Length: 113
Length: 111
Image (tube, rainbow over all chains, first blue to last red; front, side, top):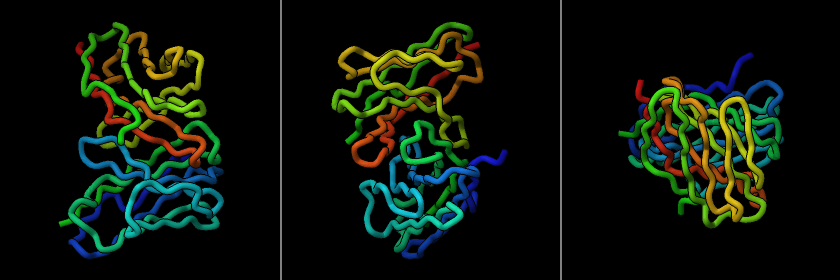
């Protein structure tokens, strides 16, 4: 069975550009969450989506946005990139928002120069 | 503000028990305590979770203090494959079931 997949694996951008990260959840999972993990720190919650609706948002600026598609895949968009946006972006899926276990993908490593 | 605090690092000898502590003094009555671990270049992996009572599964045990302000993850016999960063997490139910990670404990297992 395929786990959570994320693309691309690595990405290099320059300041001011925008980026789109993609996530495909485990088949049958309807909830997707996004996290930012800066080097040496724990993941920080960005967004949670369930059934294509935003169900939670962390303390991130409006430059960060996301959406979930009818097939439950998701995109995370970041505009006007800053050097501080360099991080590992993790996607996690779960059956629904109340389910105890989240399954994480391997992440997308974003470097902003 | 971090909702959980953990030691930065710990060491254990192989095949000995490991107790990983976590403080979560601001926990509310509906928050769940989760533990995940992360190997290099991988996403976090579920270990165990609980609400009020101690929990056991095939990977580990979770001991929760009576006032719920602290918890301890117990690995009964550490193996080299248990070397990872262990995260203590609060799952805040009343704001949408969000996970709040701590800074993690890097566990080194000595052969």
